[in-house]
Amino acid sequence: MSAPRVSFVSLGCPKALVDSERIITGLRSEGYEISRKHDGADLVIVNTCGFLDSARDESLEAIGLALNENGKVIVTGCLGAEPDVIRERHPNVLAITGPQAYESVMNAVHEVAPPAHDPFVDLVPPQGVKLTPRHYAYLKISEGCSNRCSFCIIPALRGDLVSRPINEVLREAEKLVQAGVKEILVISQDTSAYGLDIKYQEAMWQDRTVRTKFLDLSRELGEMGVWVRMHYVYPYPRVDEVIPLMAEGKILPYLDIPFQHASPAVLKNMRRPAHQEKPRAAFRPGAKPAPILPCVPPSSSAIRVKRKKISGCSSIGWMKPRSSVPVALNMRRSRARRLMILALNRCRKR
Image (cartoon, rainbow, N blue to C red; front, side, top):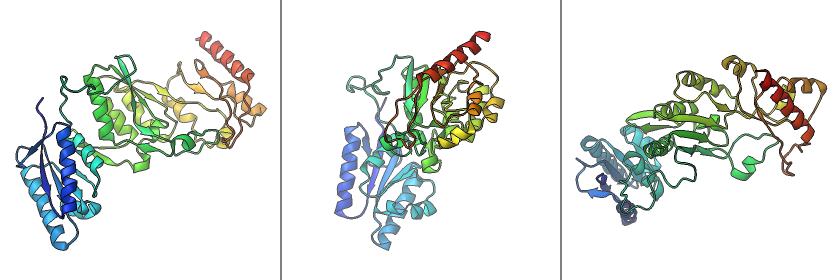
């Protein structure tokens, strides 16, 4: 595989020139070739200046020239701090970053023209080092969680939701498939909330626009020809959108949903949204493994009746309480044991 070629335009002051040198050094260290001409290059980077009106005009003109001669343009530098100005004049630029955004520029280049992998030189395989068996791999799509469930300390430990750009996620998935992975397990703290923090930001993937959203991610992964299994999905309305993909066989008919309780009163106390009727109407009766949290107060006879309506074949466990959790969990092993017996009896009847 030949090395990708990048054409570079550096405008502005000596400080901007040093920024250009740093970016080009990073490109060369990753094996990219620097082209003197836009025509024939895999992409063009324009390092802009925005200090004077004349400098802004020169930068916008250079961007337009690169688009005309090549079509794939990444904009960085001082004028990149005003992306609306650039988009208004040149809406087809691939990415815009501000000054000193070296890592963002490199990430944008990787999305357009990934660096060539040399098996004789590179010590790390294209898909990265994996600790799982070769036939499956985990694909983490986000970090943190923006929910404030009364029983959970995840936001305190990992922070609010931060979604990875969808083209970055899909590129990683593609490398996994090329490496021989047969099953991709999508994970995060809250998979169905993917992209919510960045307002479902759009990105380019294989010459088309996709949104950083649970549905778009599921659809694109479903076209890669491997099993796709969604983990840590919560019963939000967004889940309804992927059910047709399951019916078409694009992704596995599997949802690892933590059924944290059956009582609306307790779910409200846990600060969890819930709609029992929609999941029941969407899925035919059957064994669906899912974790259950049976030990969240308050407890009443009416709530206990609801707990007995278990579909069966679920994983049931308990959690040790943490002092930092607003609701102190009164854990009872006997309650989990009764639920397990009930679930086993339901499974045997089938």
